[in-house]
Length: 425
Image (cartoon, rainbow, N blue to C red; front, side, top):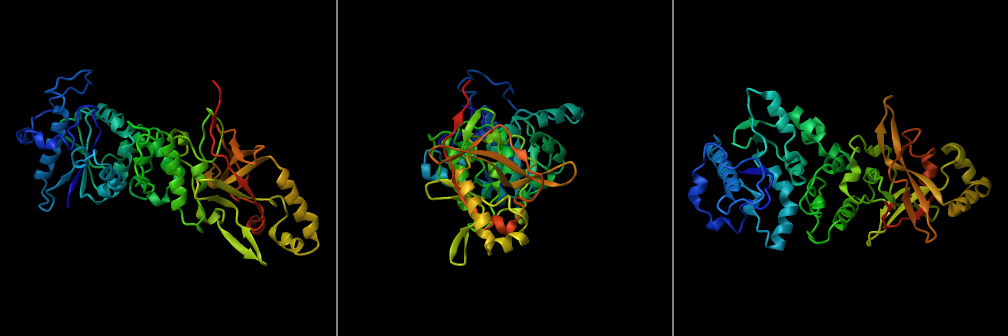
């Protein structure tokens, strides 16, 4: 059994794995009564002052473990001094194991350097708590979602309260529901999870993907230096990990970016999911995926597919304006097939503008679910691209297509571009 520390790094002031052997142990034993470092950032801290904040934080966490009544818990894990960042293999393993390590901890100590809790002035203290930069960092998102038990502390290691005590303030700071904060992550759509990350920052661009691998249950080898492309690779990893025959949560494609003129289906950055926290995924209403044989003919169900190179294709119904399933069944297997189906397929082959309904929904004021719609445009190279990227639309109902039987058996394939074009300033 072990405790684990969640905290916000102070750039240039952290004791790291390589520094620990040379650190005087007496400094860790003698915890001063209050934080010796000013909460205001220093532009040029003195060398002997540089690690004081980190040492005080580590010493305080160790003391909390020693003071616990649980005799079985005598260890604590702290990322800055327990991960050798100079070893690329250890770094990749640690990044992919982080969520599980926080999840398996007996308790998570959250240390807030920028909060001074005063129980005699709760209004001001709560305002400081909600405004803490801890809620704005990418890595602290999974540290908020994974552990079973929390204890929040201010900059002087004074106990603020547990997660349950502070649930209202945490919801205000993060815009995450109590249900999801309580551990019901499987009930959250991909867009909802992305929206939790949208307002957070990381020191490195690549960490925008790495910091939520556990939240999405994804493995990704760390490739620092790749920049923005890592977030795209992260989204591709989500798609690859999805079971082939299971309806895909297309809320991953329900993002908005005013500055993007045209693109494929994947978002260029987490910030594109701001405002996507109310988008739901309902598997019972979603598009089928995969293929089936009908009278010796291989037919693809509507939905999304991605090949080994990362090329994404959308299978969309080519008979979406046909009558209901019963009438269509009669027409399709009689002479009406020639009159209705073939002309419709020819029309679809020349069509260059589409409104594509995604397998994700929002709930209106009337309580009804409505599928989200994006606009697509075909180019001369026969690649399709998303246009009007600054918005998406609502369908008239929660049903994706008028006839489920027809839409599942007569589809046209749209090969999508991977290129993102930004509007000129």
